[in-house]
Length: 205
Image 1 (cartoon, rainbow, N blue to C red):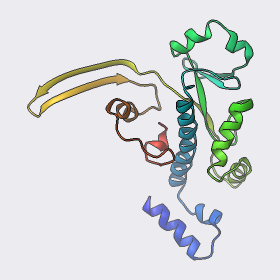
Image 2 (cartoon, rainbow, N blue to C red):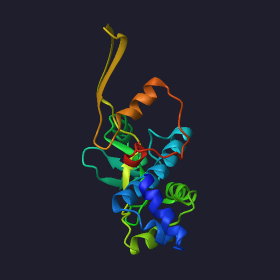
Image 3 (spheres, rainbow, N blue to C red):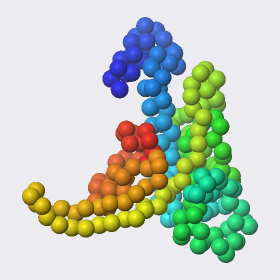
Image 4 (spheres, rainbow, N blue to C red):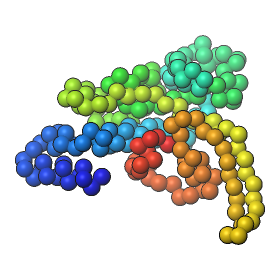
């Protein structure tokens, strides 16, 4: 927000370090920026999985997210060889998860972990910086979120009213998800840059 930016700029103009200046922000503003930062990294990982065609599959080292319980488990050779796993993926019982980077976030394993770490490092922030931020009183615990979610009970119909023709789309989403993300896919709007931040990003795609 403009108020937060002014507070930071004022502190910098008075000789404060970048870290000291950031701490002049109100806690709510800081929380917004931290969540937007985490979401931008998550979206980078999500885009990479989309491009690789692995969004609907599990990789060795993934942390699989169980939609019913919101628990997770590490995917190893045994899980990949399980003949039931393909059906569980198709039914959206499980999905690959992505990182909301923070000090207590559960890490993936192997190559998946390296990919997620690279997404963090691409921002110019490393794990040591996250730890320093937390030790200085910052709130950045971290979490895992599913890289895909089910669109529940979708309905589409067309018609016309006093305003003219319309198309009505109705559906339900799990908590923490945005209908605007689904509508963007349906309407084929121009994609935003992978690292652009909006209020929607602050709550996760």
